[in-house]
Amino acid sequence: MATNRFIVSGNTLGWFTSMARYFYRCLLTCLYDSLSVPLSLSIAVGNTLEVVTASYFILRFASARPFFKTIHTAVFIIALFGSTMISASIGVGSLFFADLIQQNNLLLVWKTWWLRDLVGGLILTPIFINLAFCTQ
Image 1 (cartoon, rainbow, N blue to C red):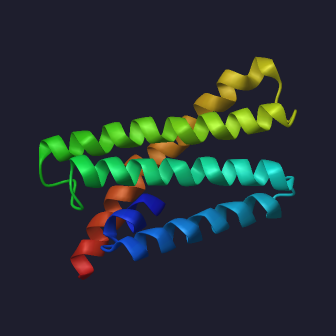
Image 2: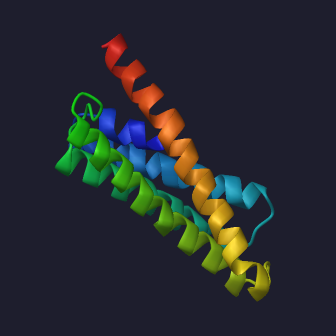
């Protein structure tokens, strides 16, 4: 859902403001879940990098309306595919180094994190992007 905020915001200042707000929301959510400050920071950075990476590649290689051409839709899917791997890797790595998950569960937790982010991005982001442009 945050990817659509970055794509829809037209100017650079709006983009950086949205990025900072998203980072703080992730950080506060992790802190609310009683995670330590370093762990919360690393998960918030991973989640923010996911959204920034996806938004950059979608805006750079597709457009702000990535669903009007087939190639733009393909770029959208590939960008989400790759960027969600960043968030899953940083998040699961952080949990592993904080001794919150065991080594034998590492791949299962990573796949779960990655699929949750990917499916959420593939289902919700197109809806919110199209709604944002319908109201303008």
